[in-house]
Image (cartoon, rainbow, N blue to C red):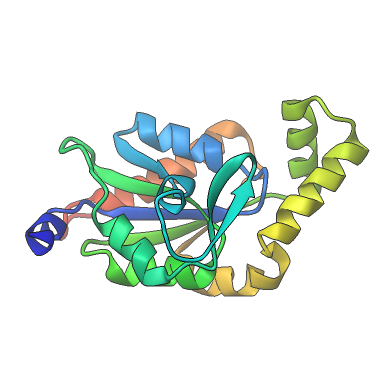
Length: 189
């Protein structure tokens, strides 16, 4: 049964990136364009392997068995009218690579980043923080996600790298182009 279900899977976008780079904006935009949006924490909260952890108030798992994650990913319910699936926000390169390999349809990894100053301003504005408090929060989020130590690996595995330091319209146009490329029927340009 799983094989036939997987044969019908739509293309997959795996979204990763630095904190406050615009991943949630990307997720909302792509969902409005017919993509089934799944936050990675939705899958992580269902896992039984690994150790319990709480991130941003959500109980989930760390150090889990990647095969359990992949099994959950491959069996998520996807509405029939969705043109693609988006899983946001990956923080582990090896898990992203395993998910891409296991997905039975085209899959692309998209990494979104922005200069630290831009991300800092966004966080301060969104959370009504002064810059010092926003900097502490941003640095803690990036450290937990091991952003700096994995950046070279993300560069190596991501098919799409977006520097979200342009205006919003340009950013959304880049996302639309990636989605259109991914969902374009084979043989068309």
